[in-house]
Image (cartoon, rainbow, N blue to C red; front, side):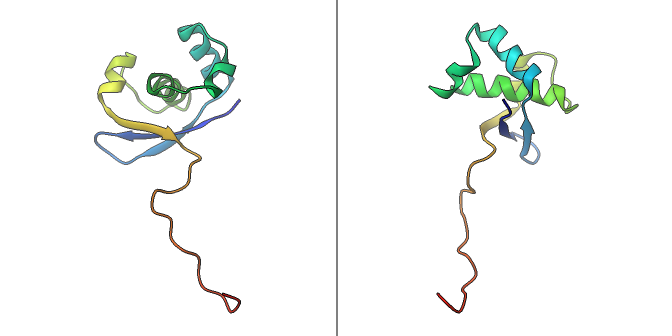
Length: 95
């Protein structure tokens, strides 16, 4: 299972990280739940933890503790979602 997670730090530019099997298993071990539970209700802590572990797997520097990572993050969201302010397409001869 691969998820793209958009991380918006308090300082710096937002970035997207992708989970991998190791990240998902780390999440299952921490929260003692199967990955299938993510589909029913993904809480902020769950998504932030996945982002934290994915950053480590992708060699993105993070603080040693998860709580210190949280203190530096403004938000986490679905990295596959549509832009907040999408623009209209270019008009064509048919429109």
